[in-house]
Image (cartoon, rainbow, N blue to C red; front, top):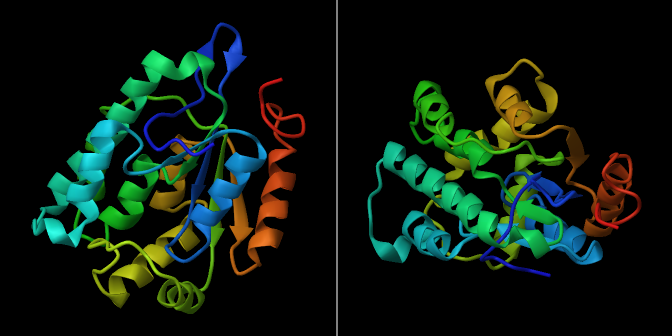
Length: 235
């Protein structure tokens, strides 16, 4: 079930826990393919960030679409990302009682650092900005890592939506790739600490595997979580 307009979060409603699973990784790592497959398998909602609300879809266009012709300051871009996620939470509070588990293609509160720091946003600014928005930790975060050259080749071989963030050049993309590597491999790094703020458990997956192997590995990791007994966390 792919709903880009609503979704979230590890909230408790009437005794039912809505599990929130995040998949993060560099462009070309297979992140979107994996999160869609997991959501479909578990009959859950698939939310894409930015853009997982009505307002968020408009903000996504402003942030990512080069046809908009806007030069956005790095700090302004992060404020828009915060607004996108804040609206995502607000819309969910009104409708989440009947929703299934949610699988998120990115978490703005994490990717804001991975993409924002190479674009000139300071850690101090990002910390103060995201400290203003409170929300529960996700049950799990999957971090996909993959050699930069492999991700680059996949991006080139697959048609993608126009994106001015991803079009900032190879050096920028290389730094983003390195950022996800730091989350996975450097437990004392700033980016790892950021990820730990927003997820109870972090699973690192080798995204150089085939899509089928990656999916099966992710399912296995989900099965180890207390909130899951096979598929969905809901009975």
